[in-house]
Length: 357
Image (cartoon, rainbow, N blue to C red; front, top):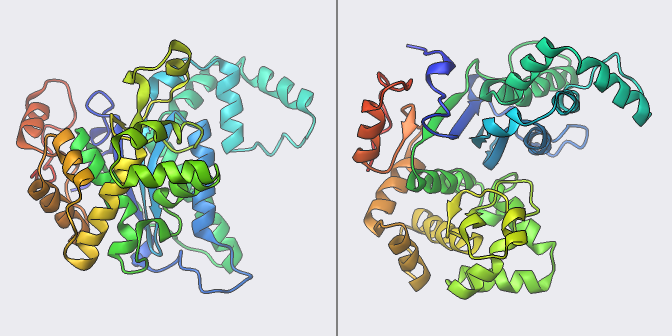
């Protein structure tokens, strides 16, 4: 039975959600056939995600755009939206939905337009609520593409399946495995042989970002991927200026006050990009080749996670070999699920969770 989205998304339980949306009839509507006149819809989605990340109170931690579906890992930042001024709310909204009545490149005209519309408190409240709503985020991603694709193909009809799936991520281990699953999706589908070779994925965007910084940063990242703890710590600031949520949450790292204040909230504490790449590479070879060498750096990762190789293999094998992910939330252990199921005031009481390991 279909359940209202308000019963599937509860920021009081978790801020992280894995969203999956499929093309109608799972047709390969996003596939590129080499036609130069055809728009690259997968690149359009990637660019649109960056725009939405910059304007919504929702941050993107990972994504993978496939031929017939897409994955987006979202973090709800409700408190951020509550601090925006009315003018900031209106400015962000028109950046996503440019008004037809505002056709001017004059900055003064635009600022006056924003100031005038910011006086409407009821409208500002409505827009603020939309800019922190996961449903509006997905709508703002999918609906414009459907209109553009139909116009390009001179046709009418549905582009996407009616509803997107949202899976609540309840703990750090589940968050890590979900990120790896999303980044390895092209490899699991057989359209890429290595994670960073996968087009239109967050892992490719992260690696490209480091490469653009120069040879020195590339060498640091290579050392971090080999499991060097010192190199991982040194390379920890690489993602601070990337639009995606950084892998490592460095706010608890021993830094000077100015550096700590400039740190963006990341996904996992004490888990730098180098460690993530090392684990991603190991898991990819494990899936693709059926075996992989257990390097020292990988062993250390599992120790830091208070987990084991067996638990990781079970979790990722189930996810990567599954035709579709089931359940409304994901957790790495029964204790987490039990705590959520018995907590008062949440929306997940009667839902059937994805089985934990």
